Length: 193
Ligand SMILES: [Zn+2]
Image (cartoon, rainbow, N blue to C red; front, side, top):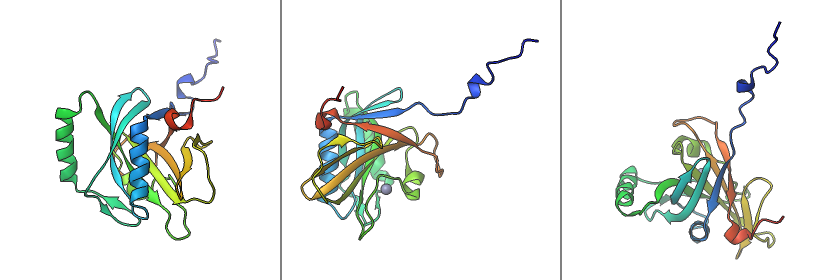
């Protein structure tokens, strides 16, 4: 009897295809400088670039100017998002709105992390790139590098920065998200062989 040995090859555990985001230098610089500028408050903004299959190329990060900045959250009026989208449709010359970014900052003794909060997950745009830029007081100088946790880390001025990304496939509140591998060779240098 021809026992089927290739059992359930299609049902092998769903380890999703890795998603990568490549930050170009202008996007990186704006995310870091706007996050540091308003520290201890938080900033947020949108990301322009190109989305490929399981891959985002991030050309620009544009901070919202009217974010309501709290110490533990940042929010924006959805009408403004609509207006921005309209402008982008006309002017973005092939670039798309591919996602958004916001910062997390140290709060007292609790260090900022790149882990999305429940509120973040609830408001994430499905199918888009979500980047978190965590800013903490620097303990020591650190060169810019890719961390073992798929993030970009480094120090600048008095701050330690970590940039991480995540992706949610579906809208609404769910705790399922996928980590995105962040790369920025412009700042970390070419990958070592
Ligand atoms: Zn957040």
